[in-house]
Image (cartoon, rainbow over all chains, first blue to last red; front, side, top):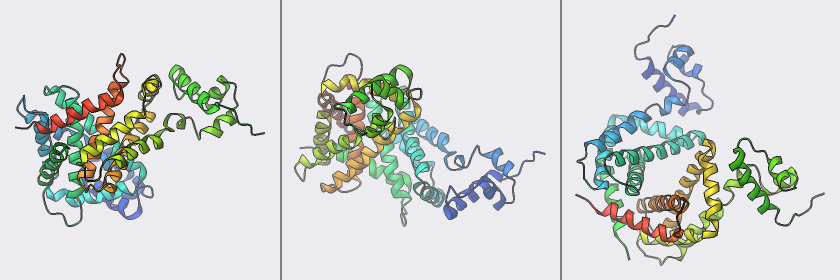
Length: 190
Length: 190
């Protein structure tokens, strides 16, 4: 019998993160997660391929937000302005209501070396995807790769500040500040 | 009997890369490598912890070249000028005689997903190491991370051009050009 449980996916995801944070990722099984919200292990595997996917399932949507931001920029804009548009779009993907979730997720990732490696590789994949988007938007190499990597770095640094304890600014606001810092860093010169 | 074989390490390394390129990394054993140069498997493991280490054993020296370059920059220099000094030092780590070796090594890495992941993680580690070096040199955050990541990106793009078929410019020469491109990309703006 395959029954659809309304809201099951969200309940499983929330329960998974709480258990990973409390017990550790390695020590938590799919059965533990399902059981904690009164569902079966089989239901868990109808929603997620494995334990790790609960943590990384938003990646495709997240990359798409960047790509949509690139498409929204006027053709012919300077590369870093296109990246700024991509950062705005990606920043809106993380409204303030998501900050607590993102903070919990990050604490789980940094506590587990294999999840941390996975996260770093996802950042690399993001940069590759942004570079492809910039080339499609008419920006040649090596400018596309340089601007894409800069955008991924700005996002990474801004995101780290956004989830820091006590931070109240929005992610797009922090991204704009860090992008400004990047411009200063690369403009000062002897 | 433990006997020191003069030049064994270099012979093993050269033979390993040739076999990885010819047969594939997964299909080559430590015994195959040792045998191809008339040495024992035991000798192989006196020089390398495993098959993968033959490919990645230069990482510590390579990172040190960047760090030495940072130390050579005048204190108080703008962050990107310190990075430029680090790139010069790292570029000299790859003289033209090494281009053929580097090209062969890269072809093996891109052909194997797990080696490719390892290489990407090493690039991330490099960026973290450069950021630490910049902070020690008096550059605060977030400038240190932004400049470090920019330096790692410039190195990565320049290295890709340096090992391209038919390329004749030196690595430091290409690095200077790409660093200039990065400055242009981050300076143009609407």
